[in-house]
Image (cartoon, rainbow, N blue to C red; front, side):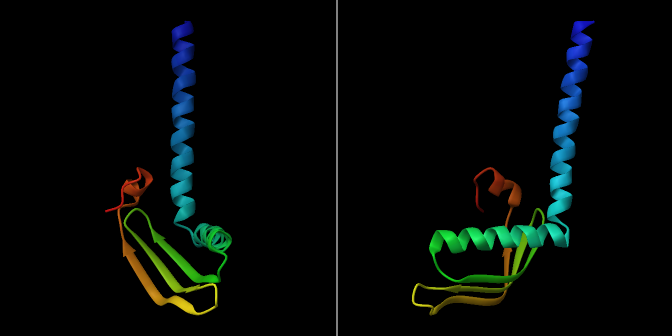
Length: 102
């Protein structure tokens, strides 16, 4: 009886984790989720580099590619280091979660 209860609790925990992961993947694929991630990434990079960074749009095609539209990076003297109207990166995002970049 106790074993049955422990198994039931364990299955509920596994189901909850799966629902969170599925919800996160769905959120990342929505425009609102991608806009939220874009704002967080740009704010982090600005703070980390102390330079001007802007990104008009982030498009994530999970799990295979990432597209940055109107991506701008300036140096400390406000000279343009990088400007890309459209930057497309094909990558394995599942591998990235495992700290592997291919």
